[in-house]
Image 1: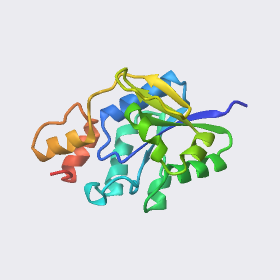
Image 2 (image 1 turned 60 degrees about the vertical axis):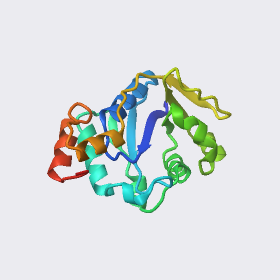
Image 3 (image 1 turned 180 degrees about the vertical axis):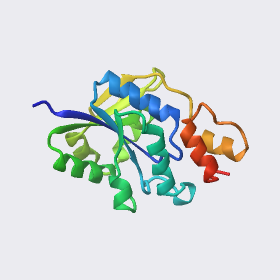
Image 4 (image 1 turned 30 degrees about the vertical axis):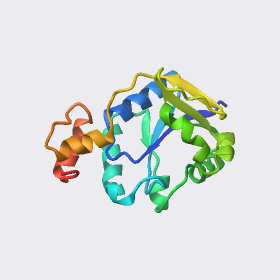
Length: 190
């Protein structure tokens, strides 16, 4: 029996946007993954807690963004754990509990040079595969084994979306319509 191939796209998703979805879909198709799981952070180790909205709102927005795509799912491990999470801890538990799955952890090409600073990175690279999504201008040489994929990248950031909403600018077509509706209904980022 062949092992399942599952992609993991972790992030704060504050908010999730079409760039996240587009990258996940490109990686899924290029690597023939069975599924891509979006893994929202509860409190990422590198983020100022005050700058992130509640995990409940972020998870709700991810659910809305992916609900019509059966190739996408959500992984709640870091949210359920509460507190700061490290990728090594989360992925170790997943690998231990799902021996019939190969995990592909998706990171931006610009993040590759930060890998040496990740908690237990040497151990982590032994249990999962890293996928570095890049455009040609990134120099993402690394001592770690990374599957490098050239992907088209939509020039969208969560910061741009938050600032645009705060400034009363339209973010239509940058985020899924249902996510935009959720943000408006809950008066997030105003």
